[in-house]
Length: 63
Image (tube, rainbow, N blue to C red; front, side):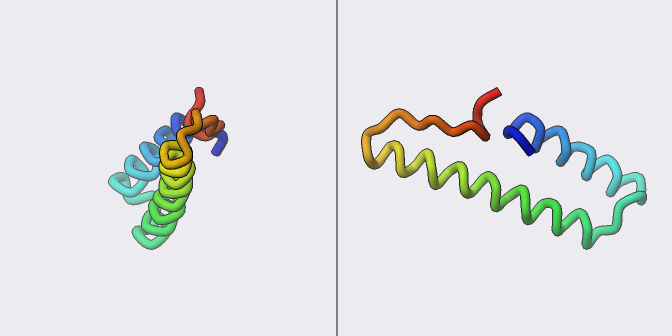
């Protein structure tokens, strides 16, 4: 995943595949878990930038 937009696109596919029955629930949960960790990591970077009064430059959040 290069950025949040790609992540959202992939998660949408996971949702579609899960509903269609072409993706196992456990696999969907694992993918969702990893996505959550990626988002949490970006949030930590944003929180740090705010706390240190710096402008965050986070490639994952850029287009």
